[in-house]
Image (cartoon, rainbow, N blue to C red; front, side, top):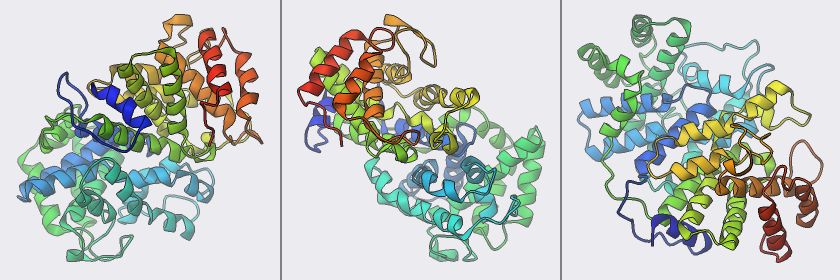
Length: 461
């Protein structure tokens, strides 16, 4: 049984992870953790690979400090996923944002503000409620890290990565040696990346970034960060003049891979499914007003349609993964648009319509995911060519893309939405979809959907 066939089997069956599969080059945990890190960059409004920069800075410091290889690995994974709890906060923090402020603006400057590298940049003080919410985000990483099949050391580092040596950090108010070494390294690396990014926005050129970094280390680190960590990093950039240039380039991906153990053992289907569900849950978190479990419901219906159509088991497994991951690009969408109750402007629609391309960018380069990326990118294409992002028409759209489009719209109609009062019952959704047969949706698949709904093969939770 191939890995994607096993995904389909595990999706239907018990939580049995099976054995890893060897063969063609396929995704490893490293590939999917790096993809998740890119998704978090989009959520925080940062350039793609910002999380990878944090990982290289933290991992390089840990290597120079001669920490055990296992600890270096945990630090790099923690750096890649350090703000994973932010995804679960978006809908909660949105009501507490200062007027005219987006959650992305807040996410970008928060590490700097927390370490008092900058003051409050907003016209009014940030509320206590908002700070309390922020202080909880490191604690919500543990479950996600477990589902990604990483060690508890990774979540322990993440939970303490906003602690500061003078006790002014959060969520526990730890001081100096109370903070795990991995968390002390990550706390510093996180702020270093923010300093570099802020300097890059204000002025171009490596010299200005280096000057901002040296000023930060000279003035702002005393008492807050482990001075041994600071000194190791200072020696690193003095000894390697190209380090800052390299982490600002595409080379940063290879640098991360060099810091992690090579994963020659491929994922089993069950493990791959578990990791994809964890990644899909990030999109579900920011689409919380759309009803929880959305990605799983779309995957269930897509798999049912594919099986009924007689599609090969391997492709059924790929389709389930594509459904779980297709909306991860929504992490790039501002919360204000996802939660808007009124009609969208043309500009707002254009922003939302970028999410399939964002999904492509997140998953690009994951070995063996070529079909998954294609199908996920097509779930908003329409038969008449008036979909997005590529305006494909008819059978230019793959069968996987056509199935996902139908499963997605059925779930949209039968689930709550902020812009309408009530969800449709499954039987009431069928005539609405039927109006779009031939023009919007594949006619054969519309007939198939009607059949599975009438046979009660679709469960709406």
